[in-house]
Length: 136
Image 1 (cartoon, rainbow, N blue to C red):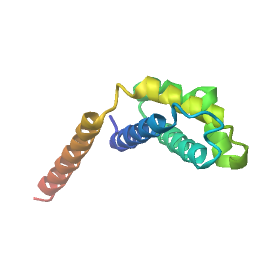
Image 2: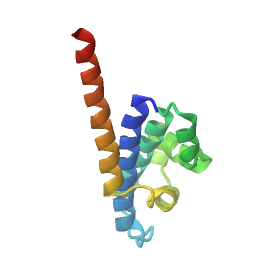
Image 3: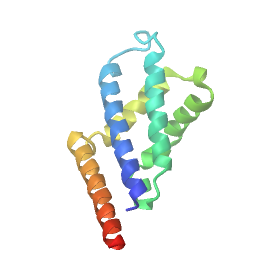
Image 4: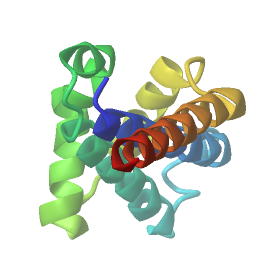
């Protein structure tokens, strides 16, 4: 797995975890409860960040694993958030958040993020040792 994919996976795990927290707050709210657009904008930004991270994955197997992130409804949220922010539809954003959380929440928890970060640190340490050995 390319090193960049490890970094991207860490980002993806963190964004999914943040979406899970957001979903726990908004899941029972009605559109009327959500007159403050801050919720929609915040969730849309997380989805935008997640989609952007997905686009950086190099490994085809990882791209396939996160194929939900290329679904038209998720792409649409990202595109509207990036290009026409005021046109965000709260129902679509809330549903997109729910779909992502339901699809990926079991795959990511605190422990999986720690494992990815530990692997990343180990890889960086190994690279440093390899470079030091090459100089000797």
